[in-house]
Length: 147
Image 1 (cartoon, rainbow, N blue to C red):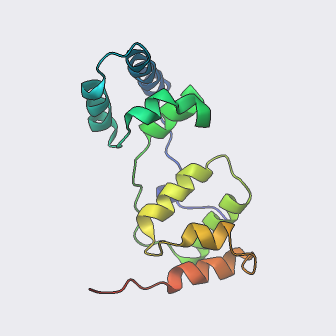
Image 2: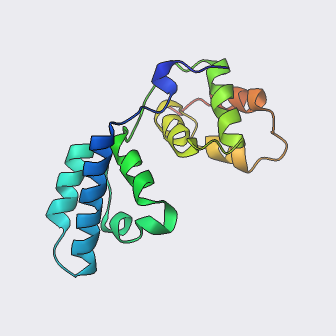
């Protein structure tokens, strides 16, 4: 199934990615030299809409490449799509289960767009549920408790 554009990972201009990669390296260098970097990290977060911490810049190569970090920073931190359909949700689950290269982005979409706090456990840690349609039903069945 094709997903509508709002659910797909947005592209970023190569110039923007290069700019972000350069800034990531600059901040990482500041931290490696023991120099103050809090203001640079704050500016980076304001420019990208993310909430990166010192740890993200000191250990970024442990989890992702510099290009992957720049791409993540270029994309929305909380890509909320309020009206995800059951079919779209099942397709996102399929893509996550298949270890799609964009799994991290799809995970952020689910974090921001579904009310179920346990969607990841349903996908990754519930062996009885392996069908994407069943998982989508379980995610959609969650109702937050009104306090």
